[in-house]
Length: 237
Image (cartoon, rainbow, N blue to C red; front, side, top):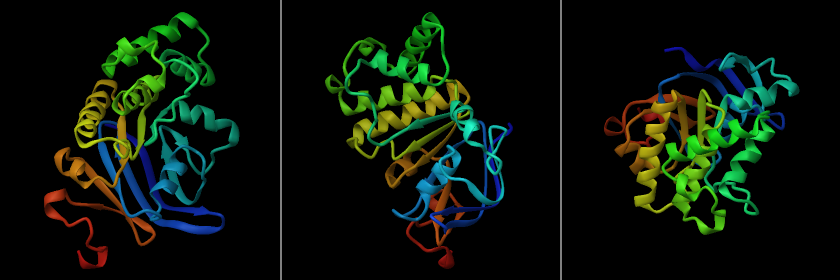
């Protein structure tokens, strides 16, 4: 399997402040990877760099064959067509139906053919088990249903990478488990790598994957949950 993400000796700066340095990350196209770390540790800065909102300040980095160092403004829409993003707070447009939410995103990312757009919308909603809600308004959906729509939206362009930013953060434990099972299933079905930022260590225990931890201004891979205490500093390992 090829790497979807490859960063070597990376450095990420925000407002002239170095947030992360000596970042070495490789994620293959078939992997489910967790990104853990305290609030303010730099998880969001890494995600922003991956979807083109922040530049990679030093080192080398590629995402789905895009050079993160040489990324120009006009390249960012193309980069983002290779990435699906699932947000904690769903970020659905509340003034339009589920179908129109999906059509809006497709229109914004370059789709033109209305029939193909509607066909893809039906496909992704079927994939996440919510096709029957295609004409519903977001306010008529439960939190879990809204997150399923959010996952469907992330799949529209057949992305090589799904970035899931605290996707279970606003959900109850039972619904969180459904969403986790769904993320694993759609990642396999669609052949997409998934990088999931989370604070929910119970999900990491139940649904094992690789674990990257952000701490002390860098990122390290850590062993599986039963082999490490997530709250022990690096220096104590």
